[in-house]
Image (cartoon, rainbow, N blue to C red; front, side):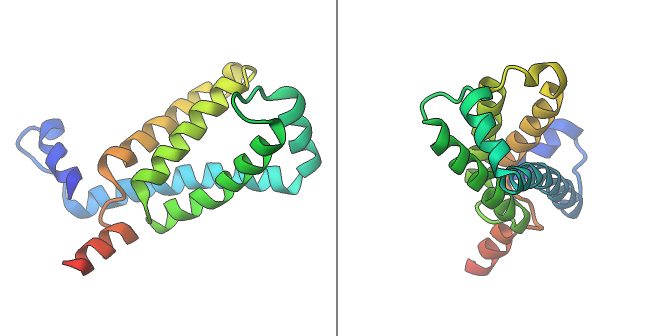
Amino acid sequence: MMANKWMPIALGDRELPGWLTGVVLLLARCWVALVFFNAGWLKLTSWDSTLYLFEFEYQVPLLPWLWAAWLGTAAELVLPLLLLAGLLIRPVALLLSGFNIMAVISYPALWAGGFHDHQLWGWMLLTLVIWGGGSLSLDSWLSRRRG
C-alpha cells in the first residue's frame, strides 16, 4: 500500500498499522463525501435558488452559468458516492479538489465564513490523491483480486 511507504517518514522507525491507515482514509473519504453530497442535495432540492446563485452570485470562470449549475450539482451528487464506495479514489479526489478550489475562487463571500472548512477538505482530498483510498476501499479490493 502506498500509504505505508510514507508512514515511516512521519513516525520515525515505527509504522502505523495498515488497518488504522485504512480507517483514517475511510474517515476522510466519508467526511468529504458527506459535505459535498449535502451541498449537491441542497442545490437539487432548491433548484430555483441554485439557478439564481449561479447566475448572479457565483462568478464561475470558463463556463456559462447554467452549465456550471448543472455540472456543479451533478459533480456534488455523483463524485461523493464514488468516494464512499472507494472507487477511483485518486481521480475523484483530484476532481473534487478542483471543484473545491473553483468554489473558493468563484464565490468571494465564502472567504469570510467558510474558507477554513474548504482548507480542511482540501487537505483531506490531497491526502486521498497521494495515498489513495486505503485498505477499506473498492480500489484496494479490486487490486488484491487482480493479483
